[in-house]
Length: 257
Image (tube, rainbow, N blue to C red; front, side, top):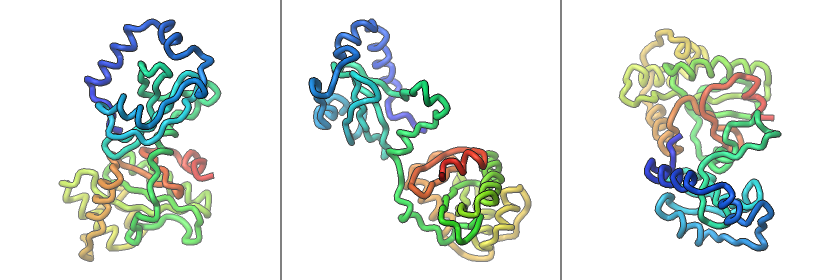
């Protein structure tokens, strides 16, 4: 994921943090008992404070603990949560994790903020894995020559076999758009509409030449650009959450429960 703060900005913030004693922060932030009745921060005020490092302030809300605002900001087409103390002198860029929730380190807030409109994704050329009657459908953008895509492909087949109510729509494309060999392999799979040929592609086997002329692979690359997908594999869940990277079948099914 591309950081939304520049290296210079981060260095400046770190210098500010390291030069200020913790006691001073607690005093300026209004202590641990601060409340939104006594402290106010509007989107406009946050925008003026952060205008040099973000494109736009989307929302302001009370933070995960007293004395902190959560500010949702836009940068390069993505939305991120950052945090400011009540004194408006300190900025935090990162995750706060409850000790009672240490197993959940997947950046849920970022994922929640960047849901996509699933209905806007054209899937007519995707290859289905799983029952056509499944009510939960996951869209998968991946490259058959990407090692983690290959591993995920095996797991989505396991997941579909374990839960007949879950299906996957695989949209293969080359993560390196100059890789013509992978482009042809993806197009051959799309032309065939065959799950077996899809499996062969992810198994590293030779596949026949494309048997059709189609813009489907190009359209998938454009879709990846539109969604600002920066790596493969990426899954789009039925509720619009985008999940990047490999995960095992059980973990994947747990996201759909």
